[in-house]
Length: 260
Ligand SMILES: Cc1cc2nc3c(=O)[nH]c(=O)nc-3n(C[C@H](O)[C@H](O)[C@H](O)COP(=O)(O)O)c2cc1C
Image (cartoon, rainbow, N blue to C red; front, side, top):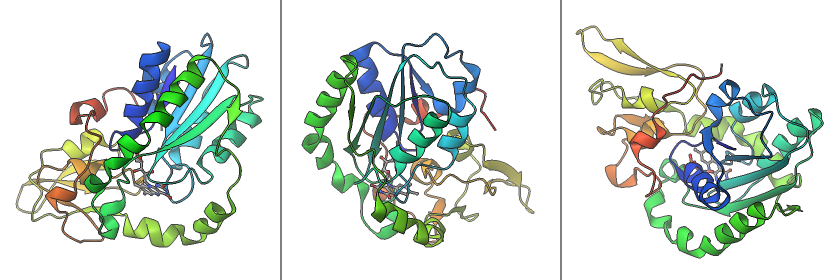
């Protein structure tokens, strides 16, 4: 069983690639509480790195899972550059449950936060070619249940990055431009933490509105057909919207019951 967290599809694509090789099934992490995992022989977690660490909801969800003690456990991070503490933090959660991590690795993919900083994630697609060999290796390693830790150590640079959490996450805070929003609700459908609601404005039009639980996955920004979801109130350029080329909007629409 591979459990993933993904806003723009990079981690879903990696989870699927591993699963094709190992015959595993793939499920969104938000749905994992609804699955009986106790009979699983191999459990993987695939998720991104956000500001040098794991998206906050990921360890929160994993803490709640009833996991088997005797299984092969792995973590793979698909991030723009680094794993930071994203593996280490989740390994702590697993260890508290008496579970040992068998294998971890990271792979570089286009950085979906780049549009906040004026770089186009679509210009980074070279990463798929450059790191294809690593993905092949990861698939083989996991299929053969190799024991190896790559990038699983506590990263002092990532710990320093924590000091800038507020600055970074403020820059990546999505908000809806009411002038552009047509109330289609796509942003609400791709939000894995149900942080977006459709409300009626004074003129009687439906518009999307973010709540306070944002995980910063940026799915709402990248999938809005009107480019109405903006970061720091800067216009979102269509060319800068990104999703993994093999993962479509329909793949990321939240369909199952979510954990709170
Ligand atoms: C809020 C935020 C913070 C990020 N911080 C980092 C980071 O510190 N290091 C890094 O290598 N990539 C970082 N990224 C890039 C993502 O890890 C990367 O694009 C990832 O593949 C996105 O996964 P997804 O497409 O499955 O949502 C960040 C992305 C977001 C949205």
